[in-house]
Amino acid sequence: MRGEVCISFASILSFTSLLLLIFVHVGQINTSTIPRKIFMVKVNMSAYGDAVQAAIFNPVFDLYTNNASAPLNAQQGLRQFYEFGLYSYCAYVDEKAGICGNHTAGQEFKPYDIVTSDMISNFSILSATPLIPLDLTFKDSKYLGQTSKAAYWMILLGTICAALALVTGIAKNNLTFFVSSIFSAVGCIFLLIAASLWTVLIRKTEAINTALQAGNQQSVGISISEGSGLFLTWAAFVCLFVSVIPYAIMCCTYRG
Image (cartoon, rainbow, N blue to C red; front, side):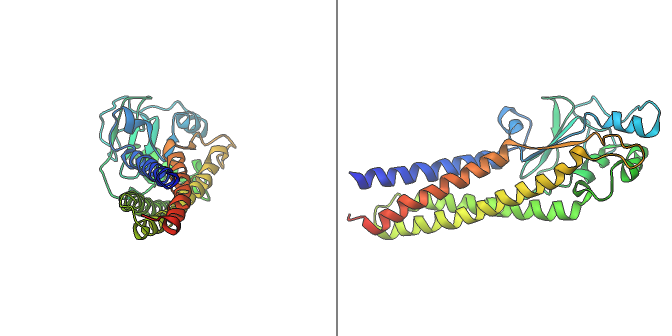
């Protein structure tokens, strides 16, 4: 009876980890209720207009668009918020209305390139320098793109391992429990790497939250924050990590 409880606990943990990871994968694939609320990182551009106005000492017009369905990357106007998932990013004119970009396996997090591609040319040139300081990670598209893509593959591999741990643990014998414990352990490593990469990436990019314009020492007007997708990834790691223990116990003690 104790063995049944132990393996049930392991299965629940690996299933929970898999379920959490599925939610991470669907984040920002469209603007419906659940995907809209799940993202890895959010870029808030709502105060950027004030920063531009402070930099040029003139009222700012045509920087933003209120058209939620306006195409992205077409200099049709900046959105208030940009939220990034694993396969796409979505841009919102308010808390609900927005549009998503093309779907790509391992959507690269390149916030500077994306927001400037929505600005008309005058504002994108102004954003290049000196409005947004050059030394910010926010502008380092190569680093951000490569790191976020690497983290995506780690999450994908961790998801596969969690699924295999759950499936192999269904058959009750020492070998399958051993295989489940291996899959759980390997999946933990992948998820730990992925969550760590995203955490470091976001923390470095958050430097723009307190950055000042070179010319007038005013705020840049851009803020970065982590999303629920990062917390779900860490939670999935914890669940899969804990599941290693009962799987390992069962592979050594099960007498079926």
